[in-house]
Length: 168
Length: 281
Image (cartoon, rainbow over all chains, first blue to last red; front, side):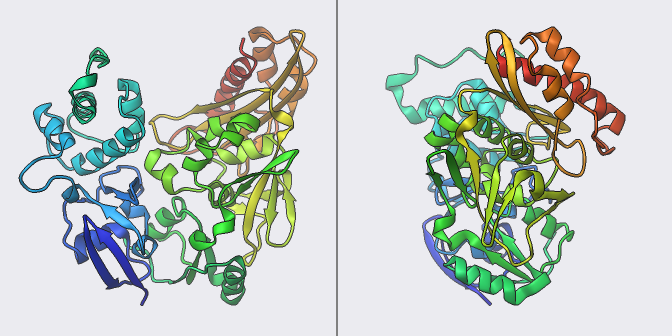
């Protein structure tokens, strides 16, 4: 059985895994990282999105063996247990979730988006999140939360360019 | 779902990959980014006994300038294609189509060569490769795009043959280009797509290359439209008239997204749009 060595949310793990084990199942079933849910079986929903070496991937479409030697960040690696990450805070304050199933993937995808584009427009946010489905809120509050988090993450010096709220 | 059991190797050289594939025979399967293959494995639509992962073969990634052409390494991710200045300069149609592939997370893993070798007629890149007369460089030969796609999800690649890269001629740099994709949700496959290159001179179209996505079991050229627009005026009326023959010679599928008849109509509309956008009129 192949051996994998991965760092997940700052902790190093060495494990023997079956080649067919998906990264999503490794995270949930072996490491107990159940903050990463599995939504679909077709790569469509994005609920299981994590960062692999800093870039968003759908962990149901990566084998655990393919994560060997790499660094994984799940939703559980963002906050420190006391303070929420700006994206988590913004999703909470903007009411960007109802059932919350899509939220971990949404937040990780949004983090990847903000890494590439610190001040995304509403349209750029929608494009950046096109691989993530939400079946309850619609996307209005999610877009608002990502915009707010991006503003917060850039700091108070540069909040003048926030675009007008999209029309409903 | 959980895939069926398979063995897995990740060789660090091309020679190692070829050796593993030869040993596996018909039971082996190359995995590149896995964004098409892993869903098939999860749904148990594919049952390879051994996966040969090319992820640790470094020479298969990146875009190289070969003078009159670009060689896009098979393992170059869509994400890297989109950020490559050579692609934007010499093959902007490739960038335009790649930007419509799935979503950002899939583009981080999915590869240029993998999506072509997967040979899905609903994929965006096969029609582009066909329109551009790309050449598929493999471990044993070079295959022109017109001979690479042999059937639904089937390419000319042999089981022990590895796609190394795809050669894109620079001769279409400066041509007008557009990829027109019609799909119902953001990340879905094209119901129909049209990859279009046009060369304009003095208000006329002097040459055109059009590849169609999802209009049959392989990507297909819209040859009748190419001939109809060549030498004609570059305006919307002329494009609409020429695009009437876009479905000629095609055999599109009927599925839950639309009937064959619907696709035959849709392709005429999209081809006219693609021509107009490529020619900027």
